[in-house]
Length: 232
Image 1: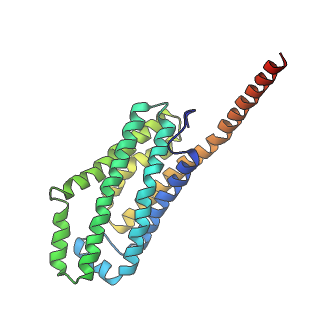
Image 2: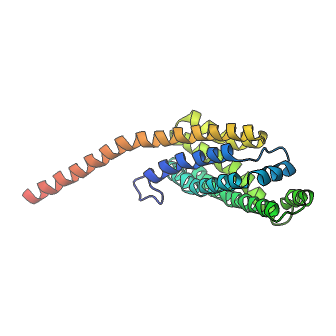
């Protein structure tokens, strides 16, 4: 990180970079949704309501943890790539705002099943939800925010000297996730993101040792100078 006080510290960044994608992988593994159609998803929710609720709540935790993860990563890179880091942080956070719209849509699906709404009517309602004047901007926030945000953060990380293979995985993730809508594809894409972000977290941890030693050296030199001045 930089010498200036950071809004998100190194330890919090490392923790969130690991836990956020891990929670999403757990959500994908637990979810009864297969991603083949809305009607099939509603049947899955009806058959496994408890499992669906747990998976979505775990995913909600992931959504919240991604915000400090991305802000902390941007903080690490802002000194080397100020524009890319700031653009990446803004768009990545906006994508999480859009993702909260997805969480609300999942709540609507659950309630439609619990209230016994006609399966066909509920499926049509959910399919049309993303095309109305409120749903469409939320979807744009999610998709565009994820694509622009992660690519910009990858560019910032590249210029900041972070591991390039990990950055490539992060940059490709939004497009891979979109191209693989099935449950197996979702699991695969999120495992890839987990690997990339954990790799970056390890890199930040390894940076901490030399940085702390350098800080300790600066403190010792300052103390020595102060002692010399007192003796003089």
